[in-house]
Length: 321
Length: 226
Image (tube, rainbow over all chains, first blue to last red; front, side):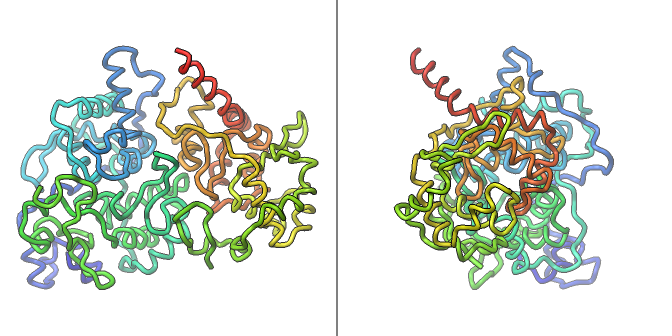
């Protein structure tokens, strides 16, 4: 999306109501088809739900499937080359193995699916939501419905949600939404925050850090990172995550402005193509249909238009595949 | 300000606020460093393996630590970013080149124990292992390995290896961070964690890592014998 100001970015679909640029208003009225739009914000209030302790996973076939799902969640790289085609693990963005409040905990997701999502105009099951993570966040190929990885992950989430209410959004779900920043997110200021606070773990070039075969700190851009369709490529989603969870062990230590700025810096870098681009004629069309939100897809940054390429990272489906 | 990373391919890192930056860029010579190390062997031992003194100080293993990490600690003792009455006079005797040399010497003296990198589920009934692998996120304590790498084997020069270090030393460092006597951790990452740990947890973590290489080797041997 072409980003002219933080006001447009934040007010997006409401542009018409504010009497802003007519072209933008028309886009705002277009049918929403984005598969990665988050559900409405979780209710405020104290987090009271506690997932069960791992020591209490039952010793039976259900428990075995819970443990397999937990292992896949922590070590998603074991699906590398089959379902995962970047360097990410689920637990990178869902801290404490999907248990931590305000880190998109899985116990809070279980109860809100199936859910109707206007963006793809249908009721989405938890299985479909997980498949979306594989397609975008893992730049991968989603496990088939009913396949062992998908059953295992669903069983783990189901166990984490033991005793949680169904069809109710709980405090602690998702990432807490930050208020609009005082100043528009600025990549240059974000670069300073990144160098001071993030590079020690995520690397000077956003490449993360490895030890042997293990990715200790995940890449944030480039082939190893989430692709242009992942929710995390949105500046607001990343800012929300960063403020509540980064640096590791120091949540809330960045100012809101720093979180916005560094999210803009990180997400103003190139990454694997949006898989939905394969079925569309152009970057312009992909931008128009799927990127009416706070992101840099299709924008010119440092002399290059982001997303204007046929590079799908390691994903073998590739362009036209 | 920039400084060289010791790990391959990472290039230059824009300043972490390290006053020792330019000095760390000096290339160390292990042969010259061996001469400098004459003042170190009384505590850190001729083989660089250090020693845990019962009821006394614990002298850390230096052999196989990343050179850049050792050098930074020596600069930090001199500058007071690490308050240590024993080390300060020795560090003060060294100039920047000698620090680079002695760091290079200990880095190559012996390899750090090779530890597995593969994922292994932590046992919730083993509290030391659980803290090391998974932490206690209800109190915002990340698992130590989330930064120090699988099996605590270290990640580059910023996150030193924990597994195979002396228990007394590890416990003393966690306590020093908690009490503010050590404050040379990048971005205060260690201080915040240490402040949330009690004495029992510090002892559990220190013992877990000090004995981990032995226990992993024992596990490997058993499996190999089957």
